[in-house]
Length: 221
Image 1 (cartoon, rainbow, N blue to C red):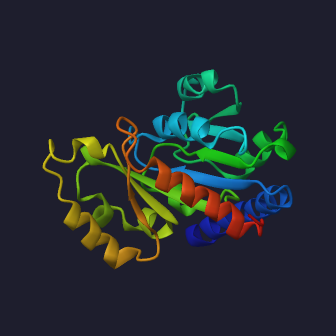
Image 2: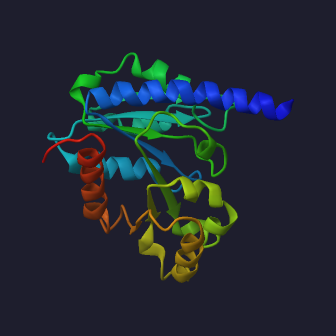
């Protein structure tokens, strides 16, 4: 009986997610679901990404957290459309929460919608939000064993960003181990080494985003 209940919840979520995806695609708006453990640098990445995309690619952000509006407030200086979604006790966003937030968004004016999911390496991987691509962040301070420990999250990824790479040498991080674990769970997603502090990898990330928007939404360059 429990399996049936879980399947029912996921099926209902997937139906709403599909509607979200159609709504966004009709407006040539690419949705990016950012997933990671807490503290991996999702908000910092957005603080660097959105200004770099510039006026040619207007962005909106949905921020998921259990409590507080701190991450949304950090994005305030960027003067973009931002909505905070507090899940209170939930360990992930749902497609319905995203749909409700989108109801008040100026979708026709945007090129990218970034969904900063709740910081968690397990729950978010199971729930489709209606995004077009999934970006998974893995920070150097978390250690080099996370791909092996949480394979489902990385299997879902369309791109993987290794963040805080300015700490690679300091923390004696085994990048070869990460690559080896990824070779077992996901060989299609590129691994981008990034540092919001030094700017490493930002251009590659921006190029990837723009290409995904063109390819997935059939937008001519």
